[in-house]
Image (cartoon, rainbow, N blue to C red; front, side, top):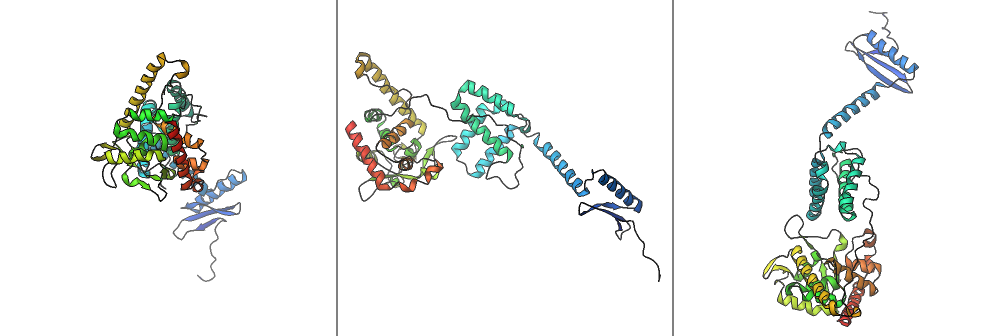
Length: 419
């Protein structure tokens, strides 16, 4: 009708066009939507409540209230899901993630075994969210008292990694990963700190290396020399194939270390080294070249892919590390028995040393000690050893092949003089 006035609504109230009314209030430089109501009275009541809260400084914008409500619901849902998931289920999820990540099978086997033997019996059926720092500390103290630092430190490092995964504080997790817990309970100070090894680290003499090799099965004797003079690991030795041996123009025999044999968790299999530093070329001391040549003629499988140390003659399958290690222990113990017997009637100055608790890996320690004594720099020594320390990797480029070959020849001279 002409001349009619437009209806005026209370301040902060507007019709929606569908018979309802929207209420808004301006506060702290922003408009806040209070809701949509069926009547003007309801909208006015909402405005009155908001103004009263603003006057008392307790006003919370409805959008913020809704966000907080959603967060509470989310947290409740999270608690409902996580409070029933046990440590055993966490271990299963962590293990599956390592498989997807491509972690070495032997490494996964070691992790699972540590947890299965030392951790799951106490915590397996407990919800992950219920494990506290006091629980972990008490468990660690008992483990350390029973097994010592050598075991407890390694087991604890695995448990700590497990809980870091549970919090989502590790790289390589999928974007939709939902943390199991908010904070890791693995907070034992000094649990993984390296401690002094009271076991004497023996550096074998050339005569002792030869004596051990002579007591090994003939087809395994070269393994003792490759560890004791070239510093190769047991797994690296067992993975060697004919194509890994090359002679350069200077007549130096090189071993190309590309793989290592592992047997943890399954039968013997080849794996790449854990780090790029393990991929390296190692010069063979000159005095070992004839031994290598003889071994290739007698015991290695034919063809470029033929293994130097096959499981059995003619079969190109990997030798089990535990088998060779057992033969080494037998050789060491036999040598010790003979020396003990000879020492009974010998004067003190002529008594021979007993290789007590001398392990196969100590042969590698012997080789690295000798090459260090021959004048190798830190960079050369770490390259020769295939050391995995990240800080050392950058220095490997300074260790040139001809320098390593010269050091190997010094070892050859030392070996010859010792014999």
